[in-house]
Length: 126
Image 1 (tube, rainbow, N blue to C red):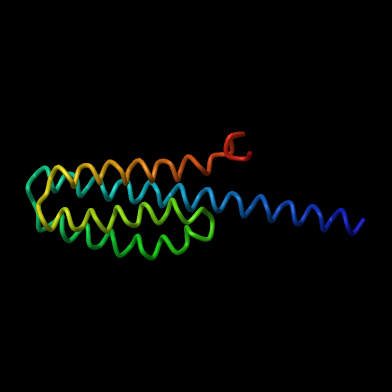
Image 2: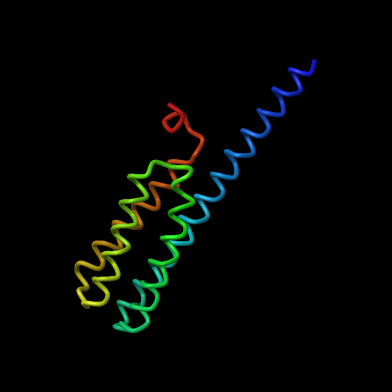
């Protein structure tokens, strides 16, 4: 009987860990998507000073968040987003709108992909 209880405990811990991972990655994905959209608005308004500040803050915060997300996910996805966010800051500083919006779209697509990779669907399980 002890084995059954221990097995149920391990199952409960596994489910709790999976739910936490889903909640964390989904929440961070949404948070950074909103932050990128905020920078988009600054760029459209030609408020480069605010855009630079927001992009630097986003880049710093992503560096910390990426360390935690790397625990749960494949590093290549997170590294790709990290590189794009770093390049985004350079585009803001240079005032290159075309390149900025290309990187912005790439980051938002990457964040959406991260979030979708956590959904409990057959394609993600296999």
